[in-house]
Length: 241
Image (cartoon, rainbow, N blue to C red; front, side, top):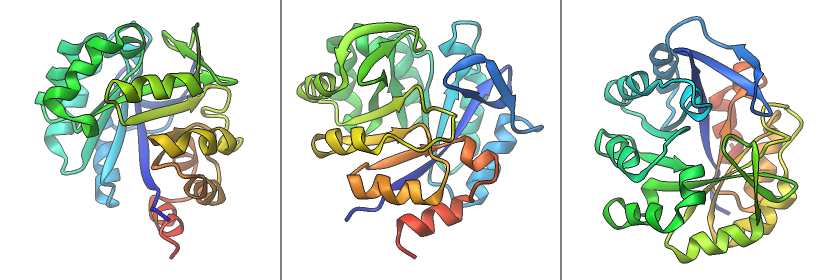
């Protein structure tokens, strides 16, 4: 059985580290008094190999934290995965050229899949992921506000056919709610792609279940920031230590 990669989340809004519940802006909660870079450094000091950084202002179309994200990329040895508000291939390429390890494409990949797939030719499938946010298996776009009319189970094979290998799959009703991940959905989709599970993790047992159903990685946010368990405890449990 493969080891589940544990990826801490660092969501940035107004130059602060925050978390939302189910993606609702009004639920914003501050989790660190220092800068995003200071928080990222603490994760790096704990031995984190890959950090998931989200620009919430860009995702919500109310601003940008690009400079803060690039400062993190330039300052840390850890690899950085970036999502939130990447509107086109040029912006994605700029981030990758600046040292971002992996970009996560949401609405852009949903509305322009063929164009987004052009990035794979230059950067490879390891460095470009598609975000598939869903509610009850129905894929959503534009910050979880619009239904696409596509099923999650149909979308993954379609993007696989274009060359994509990595998918960040988030159940929006579970995101930030600490109610446990949707392991049955991950069980159904994990066989044909590299799935990064996101949403609902609250206990170490959740990580074990995600590993068992075949997820390749998991993004953990609120559970870390609220002290449910530490990064080292998470790594130890998925490695069976």
